[in-house]
Image (cartoon, rainbow, N blue to C red):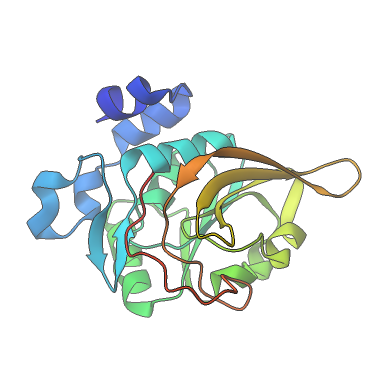
Length: 216
């Protein structure tokens, strides 16, 4: 998976590649899909949600530029896979999920795998987790129409926000945003993607139902 899907498509960060090798992706998919756990596509995990394809997870984490001291907010826990990979790269991960059943299952799974440094919360991810802020990176596995203001407020100096942004046309682009010296957000596009909608108080405002599967 790492050599054929990640290195071959340009993922170069050795720490990200090592983390992707370390986390057992097959532990984060339904039993009946284990044979496809390492395929280059998203897989359903229930509740109309998916586990993102490996390349997208690696691409987002590489863009986040995590270091061993980083504190991360992972928006959209899902199966817990991205949170686990983040925990291999950072010191502390807070993951927030709006669907209680997914959050509970992910928390149990992560505990069973020994990820004691991951806190799983149930709530509105668009509001962030102010009680755990500031964060060196905020990474979202769902597409919004803009960056929620709460995330900007909870970002540490020199922190990075990585998320897909959906345009009025319905197209989505993965972006990485930082706060410049003048206090304004500086954004850089990373390419076209397709994610489920970011649902919440500061999420997708156009009301488009969106697709069920996240894919590059």
